[in-house]
Every structure is written in structure tokens, then in C-alpha cells.
Length: 105
Length: 105
Image 1 (spheres, rainbow over the protein chains, first blue to last red):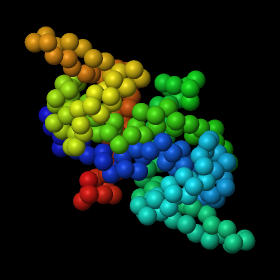
Image 2 (image 1 turned 90 degrees about the vertical axis):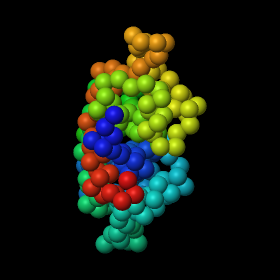
Image 3 (image 1 turned 180 degrees about the horizontal axis):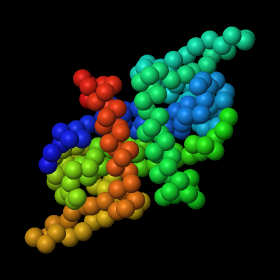
């Protein structure tokens, strides 16, 4: 069995292999930057502590960066180049979900 | 924020949002069917009980089917059409892993 051809999905699985992270990242397909409360509103059922931990982890992994917004003392998150390279995967995950589990999705 | 454009990655996340499942499924990129022991040998660090639970779950979700082999009393697993539709995602996860984390991957 040739394991070299598709040798390792581990690094991507470390990021995407989590119940919440793909749901957090999908917002970046349409938005250049998002605020904490926007993600919290739209990721159904996530609690703030979990969201905060996931965002910290994504920042540490170099997937997103936290930047200060011009107005007020707020922070926004945006994708790095490494994070943007995940978007085609998220789009495919979305397409697959629509095609094969339209009801439960 | 338009959440409809990429509305839901949930169904795919239910399958791929797991430490082991992408690593199990990647073998099907190169192989039409695999045996339990082949997967166990090549998924680094998985224990048989976990592998068995993941394969059962993938079968229940309609991603793989278990078939009897002609020789001996062995079973093989192969992808359904729904499972094959995951392969492009796995290929992209592999490409991302190679590009961004070649050392740890």
C-alpha cells in the first residue's frame, strides 16, 4: 500500500478534526474579518469559554490573527495565508454536507 | 453576515471532525478496499478498539461498506459513493498538511 501518495492528513486534522473549528472557520469564506460576538452568535451552541479556547488555539497555530479595530476597544480575527489555504477544504466540506445530509445539516 | 453561502459544514465535520477518521479514510485514496489489519498497521498509534468503533461508525453513516473477501473468512472495507465524495477533501487536507507543516506532518 502506497502511503506516500497521500501520506499525511495529520496537520490538517489537527486543525479541522474538531467539532467546532470548521464551524468557526467557515465564516471567513464570506467575511475578511469577524468579531468574537459574531462567531458566538452564529456557531450554534458553542459556549464562550470553548470559543475563546478555539480562537486562541487557531491563533497559536498561525491560522488566524487578532487585530484591533479602529472603532472602540474591539478585536477582530482574520485569516493568515495559511488559514486562507484551508478555505477550499471548508467549501468542499460544505458542498458535501449539502449533497449528502441536507436534512440533518 | 451571509451564513447561507456556506451554511453548514456540520455533516462533514461529524465525519471528519475526529482525530482518527481522516487518517483512516485516506487509505481509500489509493486502495479500493482495505482490511482491518492494514489500517491498523498504517494508522500510527490507533488501538484496535478505537479503530473498530470508527469503522462501525463509518459503516453506520454510509461512508464505507463491509464486504466478505473470496479467500478465507476475512472482511474488507470499501467506500460507498457518499464516501468517495469525501476523497477530494482528504486530498486537499493532505496537500495543506504538506505545504504548511511538512516537518511535524
